[in-house]
Image 1 (cartoon, helix red, strand yellow):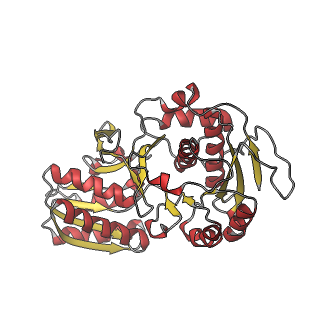
Image 2 (cartoon, rainbow, N blue to C red):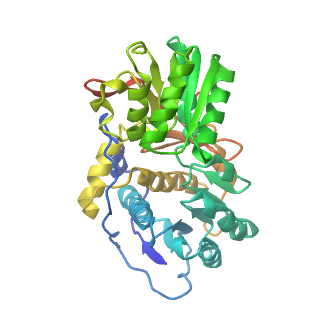
Image 3 (tube, one colour):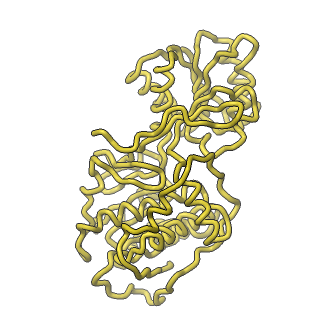
Length: 388
């Protein structure tokens, strides 16, 4: 367990403006291993946290050892950055390692008097954390993108693939797409992608002509794409997989008589610089949160910690921003005002505007990008705020 104390003024300062300013860029991908977090001021190592009369106690639950340690550390570093950049003096964030047992980490966090949990990272840990937190009326904001773990007191903050697919299909429909097919990997992600496509076609029109499932791998997706091509009768194909396998599928799909075939990807393509290296990907669409502010954040992160951040680490930064926003009207020592998370106007973070729906799942403003010969460009900007 790590404890950090940050002494300063308020969060609406020039430092935040510097971090949130920036220009549109193609994002960088995550590193092999971020450097350890720098501790501005070490807290005592006693079992109990010091008495707080002016600071809200917030628990950060992420893996700090094991196979996901690098990602967890990157998120932890980003929360440190947010506190420093905003000069926040009203939060005490304590980090608990979930890799040694998510429920044990949550039990310790609750016993230490934390009133809000940021995390866990993995969907499979949400139920264990919630079992300890709910009894104490402590809500959690998970960094997972699995909407199925949202529940009373458990919010999902990750970049949800269903929203990416819905945004892309709506855009494609506006550009004349009518008959759709899908390449879906076996497993949970493929199931969710297929359901999202069905929902989008129901909401925006169009018909699903054919679907092929496959086990992830170059040969498998290539074979599935060939079987799909033999079916024919569609003008748009959803490829619910990462960029490397998407290229393999595109090569198999785009024969001499399929040059006008429209390809649609998911948020898995975000942050990949090599999409435009294959001519078969030219014209492909996908949706993701805006990267307009990410470059400035990534540069600042690297200058502080010596390596580039994982893309997901912005969730840690933005979780601190929304906590500070709510802390304006939250009295120290009182339970976290959960209902304020459902503010219809939402919050502004590094990843753009976001808000939580009544079911606890995040709603994000996403932009549509297109793969072109000279790179990946934005063809439909993300909304700057929520209209309702």
